[in-house]
Image 1: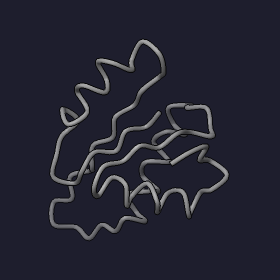
Image 2 (image 1 turned 135 degrees about the horizontal axis):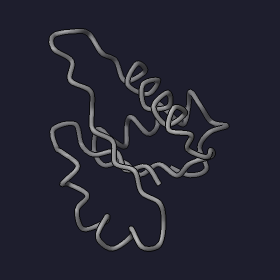
Image 3 (image 1 turned 60 degrees about the horizontal axis):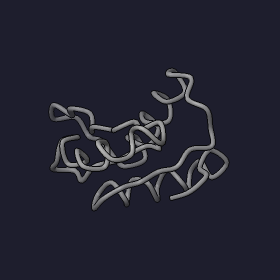
Image 4 (image 1 turned 135 degrees about the vertical axis):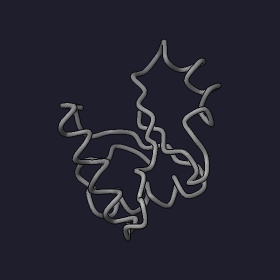
Length: 88
């Protein structure tokens, strides 16, 4: 299960979910990349996330859980990579 936090929050946003779910499922939290003035789109961030998961050898398809901007990013990922997503 990939947890995508709101754009202005850190992974601590998911503290209670990690605490309650970590014994039952594998959880990965996603923090947004530091942009340092560069242009980033949700499509680019989606590619970075999928590339990172692939490098980590995460087994696909995955479950995505997002809040606020994280849910929009989840939709972008599900649209671009439907074969890699089990649920949104």
